[in-house]
Image (cartoon, rainbow, N blue to C red; front, top):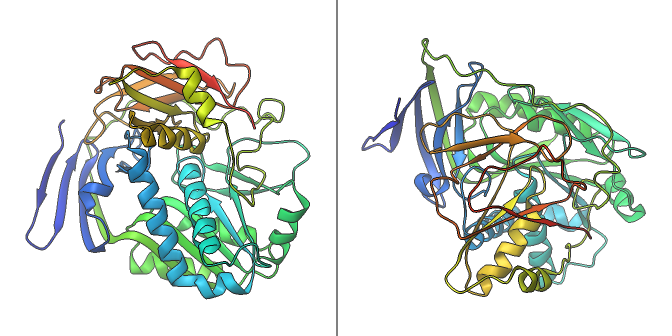
Length: 398
């Protein structure tokens, strides 16, 4: 079934998907709905739809400058909303795995830039970034929390490895939770409650997302659950209704939870799972030199799973050199080719879990070069991303 859409004079958009009828309303927005997201069906009857972000660099190829602009817009909104709270005490920025690891990291670095420009850093009220993960690491205590509607429900947040980051965690007053979208708020609430054990001085929770579709009831339930001062930051605020198609029968999916083994040896570099208090610095000029990208070549820089932000950073560097470049990431999210997902490639993951990973909307686009940036070593022999031309793999270390 193909997607049909209609937009009423009141701004209510109706979308017909294989899984059902999705209706979306926009209350206010900094960027238009069609710029920020599209729609597709999940391979699930439990939650049959998905908001497909067009600026996140996950299921849709994105210009680095667009992603960067969204990170900076959200960081500016955080400053406007809770800047005085950040002045008083430390803050923890958490990017939710796997979809928002890159977005959370980008907002963290944009916040560092904003506060440095205001001469507020270095300061006693530092900011720490951690991203959630589906991977266990040894010798690092972790909080576990659940994403109930997800294809992979189990999440971990590992305690930072540096003494400075641990100190900031202990004295943090503000928790900034970053995700691509909010519709129920349950996962954000689960994380905020779990974080209280690590942050005994926590007073404020800021829920940050690109698109906020939470109902008034969901907002109230989240605030009651967290029992702290909760504030919301987004680029679009709206609502949705979904009428499931009773005849919808999605293809079966394999388990997306992985094998649960410790991945410390596989993931020797800290790109955010073990806490960061400053920007990551990689040799992007060296990567560009080794890539030998020709004039007029169209380039895709592809991150892998949770490892997305370095792919964006290199793509941004290439864009500054006038390379025709977009970036996105592989994902374990099992979605249907429908709506704004025009194609799907399935292959084994590169984290040695032996589970399916996916790449969306790539075969519909022509690229002269595709660079896959990854943090796992070795690359499994069974992981072969079926993309033409042949992918060029780049192992990244700090």
